[in-house]
Image 1: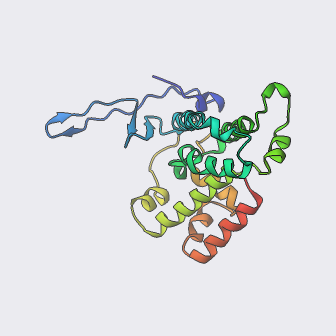
Image 2 (image 1 turned 30 degrees about the vertical axis):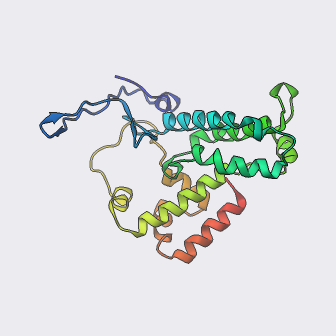
Image 3 (image 1 turned 90 degrees about the horizontal axis):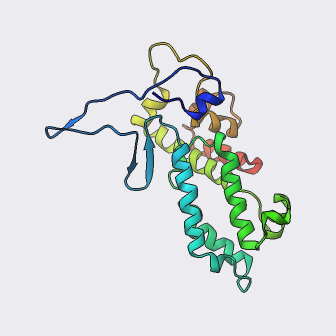
Length: 226
């Protein structure tokens, strides 16, 4: 039995256990595990949350950053070039599979990671007590990775919904039965709806059918950020 961090935060005192399954492949019963790596990159857990996956992504991105840290922190290379290297070699690792993340509960961690990169590049220690706003000014940039994730999510969401495949069925389908007590888990669609400033998830889904209108909505949302 286990209780997730999110359940503790929201005061959900129900003890929950992972559902058991019995899958047989070629006469062999597959072992049920709490987590596994899909395609050696994406971490999937029994609670279907992305906390572990995002933590893994942050660690891998920081490791990649430190591998080329001598380049990214070099004062002999212009900041613009170093930012391009960061965007090309580090951020793709951080944001891999972010199209399906629910980032609302992880915004501070992702923003802190972005600031960690910039502080390292500018050689600004946290002991220097330089505010994040000042770091961004020195780097001549803005905190933008959360916005990039939302753009990727909206683009991906519009594409899979228009395909009318399994993803559309899972997103729009209903599950019979009673809901668990306590606050319900927030879905990626909820965060996307708030970012796009549509009235509700149903309106968000309805908007995807007009491709030009959907792209306009994404562009407008990107202007005001997360």
